[in-house]
Image (cartoon, rainbow, N blue to C red; front, side, top):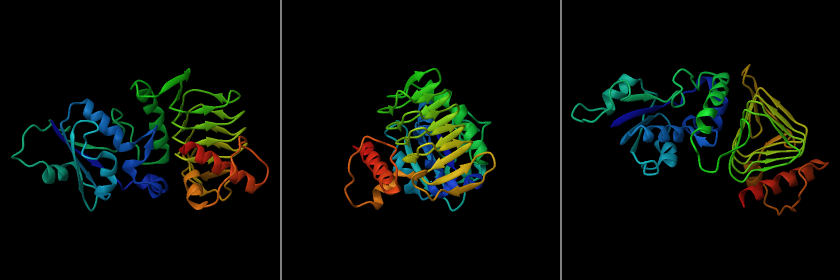
Length: 289
């Protein structure tokens, strides 16, 4: 069967996140949003998927390729603006072609996660966070490679390093290559994407932390979306950029800006801004090794 997948980019409710990364490629519990759809459509036995997006086509192709990773043939088409389902049918479903899925499955608007049609993602930060909570049980049942349930409702990915003195409260998701320090508290309802570092004594509750983000010692996240130095309250929509890298910062930005060797250290928390930044850089490089 064939289908058309409309990937929106005009996420007026998630403008700050959209500035950080194209909407179709936002990370969702260890996978780009578009990859979640590829897994789903392949499982539904679709053989050809035509992706329509107002993002540059290469942005999507970087993640999907030709579709061979999942099985279906994938083509990506760029449009100046997001299309409605009827517009997509007129442009990308010619009458002379057969083997199309019946309506409405012939055109799918990817404004939600697969199987969660009533849970829109992009209208507000609250919707985004609530969708993550509903997506976690689906991911937990997917038998994803390397994923394991560490304790009741606590799911972790590959090569995580979690202090024995840390406290994990389900439901929560901890991605690949994450490091969590002594006396940190994670959960409930918390989601850490890949390569996150949580310093000693920090706490995360009802929050999502984007990839390659450092949360400093004794810092507290609650009802928040944090990615790099960007901090968003998902309940109110208010946002700010945290200026202090020892509280919240992007590990990838620090790697790119630092050209000098950093002394290796086993301590996460140290007094002094210079020593703390050195520790952050050391951890970031270890995560990439």
